[in-house]
Every structure is written in C-alpha cells, then in structure tokens.
Image (cartoon, rainbow, N blue to C red; front, side, top):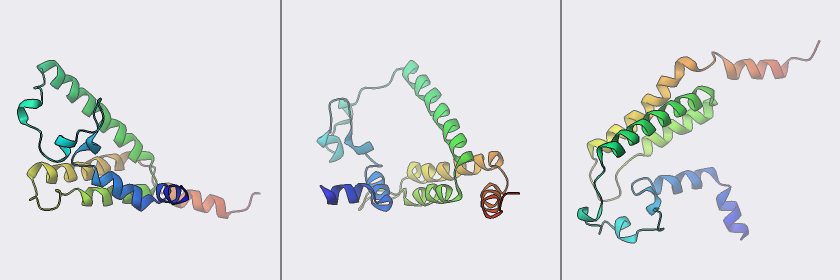
Length: 138
C-alpha cells in the first residue's frame, strides 16, 4: 500500500498514466472497461450513430469545456501552463501506429487554448506576488 500511495503522489507518473489512457479514454464506459474497444476488436457496427440532437448537444458541451479551460489557464501558474504545453507535446498515436491528422490537430488545439487564455492572464502576476512576499510590512 505505501508503494501505491507514493506512486499516486508522483505527478510525472500520474501524468504518464493519464496520457497512456488518452487514445481510449481509459476504456471507461457505463458498464466498466470494454476490453474489445481497448484492444481494437470492437466492430464499427457495435457503436451506435449519434442523432443530430446528440451532435448539437456534444458541440455545446465542447464549447463550454473549451471556455472553462481558457478560464482555468488564465488563472494558472506559469508551471501549470508549462505542464499543459508538455502534455500537448505528448499527444501521439499508440506505438506502432502512424500519426493521424486528428491527433496532430488535437495537440495544436491544446496549444491554441493556452494561447487564447494569454490575454486574460494578469501581467506579471508571478513576479508581483514574489516581490510582495519579499518586502517587509510597513
């Protein structure tokens, strides 16, 4: 158990674990792990088509999530921004597969979200806080 707690507290290991589940969303579904989908054995006929209303709802949710991410990046520390950029660099196909235009586009979109937050970031916030802490009161 102590090894599990130590591994859970290790940010690089957590990040690598999250990235390893990127392509298949962790294999999660309402019924639990879908081994066939993870192994690439799922038939396309097994996946139900989305209705137009579901596609519209999905688009609305993506727009909302993008705006939430921009708001979070606007208040993020420089280190958190750097980690987000590093994660975008890790977006890659599974071993043995070629890069797909959608994968490349996803990584570019991640960087775009970070850059769209830049105008909302307070100028010199990190420098200002360190200067304020270094000066004595009075």
